[in-house]
Length: 324
Image (cartoon, rainbow, N blue to C red; front, side, top):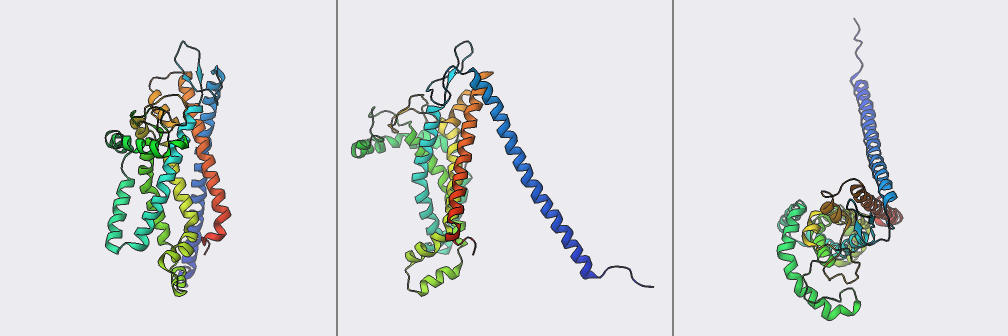
């Protein structure tokens, strides 16, 4: 009697093909689900935003006030909110990105193995700290200590107008203090991602540079940083996304106001996420739709930032060594 069972090699090849089909189908399905969810969020935000803007007595893009109380003329705009969101995020990025790259390089290329492991654990732990903990620390510790920093900036850099104080000695619950707090919050995220990217640099690149007589810094400058450039940009955009959408920490530290001022060390200012968090519970009807409209603006800003980052990465990919 002949054995009709297929040969082991054929049976195994069939299993591999089925597994490939299942994996490809599940990956494609996951991508489609993600796109559907993003589209549903965009449609929901747009519908509610159109309803709010149709009742707005002011210009939604340029009005400074935010008056959505029932029984009063509805007039609201995101000019001050968008300004505060962008300024605080920029301050955070200017402070956090260079420090994060330096810490990541120290961990990956300078620190002894045991120290690098300990620092890596600390960085990962800091990245998991909840926002409200950072907010409480910022309100109780950071803000009082920013008085001296603001006075020093006003004395030596007040000529830049940005650091000039119109209210010297006022409590530093300002956009600059928020930016410093956000920098501390996103520093572990950017550092952790950059560290992993630096560790992925092919050793042959570094060994080739060393063989040509390069110093350690020259190896980093000519081999490590060019290869990791796209990854550094991605890590920075990940941190920027958190800075743009941070809510509780900003609401704890900032003294909100709807006055547009380029003196970023003066108390006051507001951000989109902080305004939504503080007013959502008291808003009803069109007032909530107005907050959702401001959320749509934040959604669009985030998409534009990520799209710009993708374009930068695509243009520099051929120089980064990412395809090696």
